[in-house]
Image 1: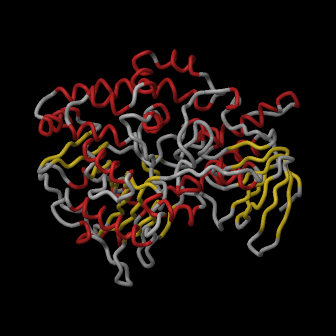
Image 2 (image 1 turned 180 degrees about the vertical axis):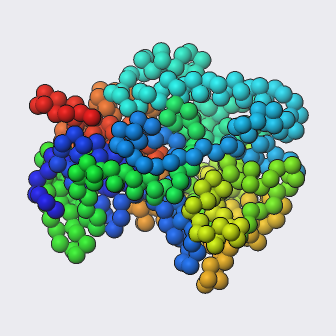
Image 3 (image 1 turned 90 degrees about the vertical axis):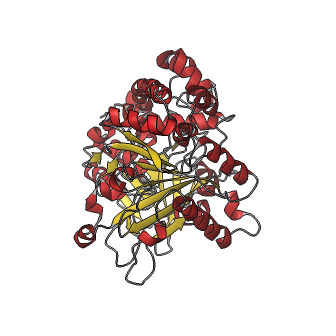
Length: 519
């Protein structure tokens, strides 16, 4: 370290912490970033997961939607985000629902084949025209001081407010769409990493909202080079601006006075102080570090990373597997199946037929594969399983047995919609082991320090101020010098950089009377 006192100490070197550091250092602040691991990036990293297999997987987070173009431009972040032509494919018996972003006639024909008519496609177009308008209006507010409920309601309009903010999303979907497959495709965006009942719980609405408003378009894009390319570029931006980044530095305590105690990789303890401390950490971790009683969030997902020697065959001969897997490939995610799986998980049982979705990133970005692997026809495959709350893996008799059972049932669920078992397509590493790894919420807690394995750090909040306690930017805490700049901040969640930007603005605007310069 160059100093013992800094204008700002950032605890945590994930993407939000790096965004905050880059903005603040660029505004002339002396900034220190402390990261527990030996690398920055948090959950947005690229990893060679299988020894001897030249494939860089986005091991945890895997797509980018919420990252505003303004942050990329402000910080000079050199990252390419590629749009996927095919939004999704959902097997339905021997056919399937293909949503082609560049061929509306093909999409309409696919809807007709699955639903037997035109009404659900027409309803689909109306519904997503509404969400697109909400995205266009709401996204710019995410980088501004918080508006209140009344202001946001006026901004989005009466119909969108009623159907996205006030009524349970499950009720809205059941009213607007008749087909079970179509209903399920819409509902999945309300359930990613969120163990909620969309028929009754507005938490599902909040999750849905964050999945459709990203950067004003709602597009989910593939970062070229994998997720690690995003955080590497952010770290470069922070260093260019003058921020110091220290890895292998585990924060042990944060005092409201601004003093931060940490342990280095050699086991030695140090103390530094900051005019502000920005916690790019889950709120439960921040509470522990400040000596308060932490909340206990609960994550809900099963993440499976794979490398396949070839893409699996489909039952639907009219769709190329390269089309089906380049977008979101839905697995047993009809509305009825989602409800049944949730009921089983709520009763403490791993679902019989777990719903999941799969993505093949190397179809959009082949650069994550080595040349020989690329020529062989191999691909990466990511699976994200729904309705897998942490309680299924932490209760009595759970542990490794529950993990293996969740994996077995999820692969069986995938096999049920393919023309061949997914296991037959798995690439073998030089060791002979199949290229497959699984991560439960418990694994994320142990590996990444996420309490309860919650990928959003805690349940998502509305993107507006609900009380005076929220503060002007939604990052404030009960301690004046300490700001929350991780996913658990209001308007946090996903790979967005929004909490990092907003925490930096909170610092800079609080100091404008002292001549701070703001980029």
